[in-house]
Length: 275
Image (cartoon, rainbow, N blue to C red):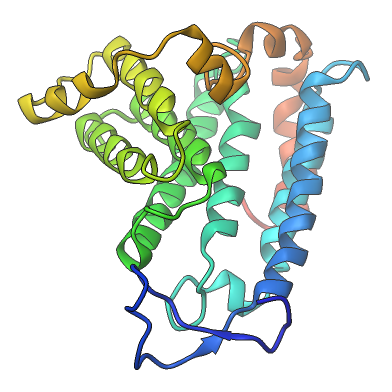
């Protein structure tokens, strides 16, 4: 797996790979593009959390453009999520989740016009749904038993956005059920999924999601986590972004500058009106 020409077989459980054709792993090329993605994520974090001035429309969209350019530059063996060509869809899950995290704070700042706010919601929902679809695709192929912990955090973040901003498409109860089932399966290997389940259930209840009797039975199995468990998993008492800190850093003029900067940096440069 550490060479470009290495071969592998996908499997759900040890032994499933027998008599299956081998295929290129693309591990090295995926790692290279993943490193590039992490650099952009670091820029987004610095934008929101550093002391280098407030978050303006110009600075925000400069990072947004880097995400778009990264996706455009992906080679087909990574960009194509078909199983025959893309054995490692996790990098695209991370990309869509990163954009959800990058754009979501703007939904809470209360500065944008109804039209611009609705467009921002559409952007977040597009990437949240895309991430969930990829997670479901990977689960069908391999199961979630051996998923990396990072994907568990991606899962709760995008499902949180869907429950909050798109409770009817898909139904919030379906989103919650999918999230809890995947976390339950992954928790066999990573104990941090238990506190994540507990926190996500709190979010679902706050958003008025109706739980079926079967879901309540599942929920009852992980309602015993205490503060230390949550701190161990998330390093704070929530998996969500610290909006109380982020919103203080958003320039009040961001909404006024937004249409012009969007036209200059996104539409004029890429011809892309949305997403």
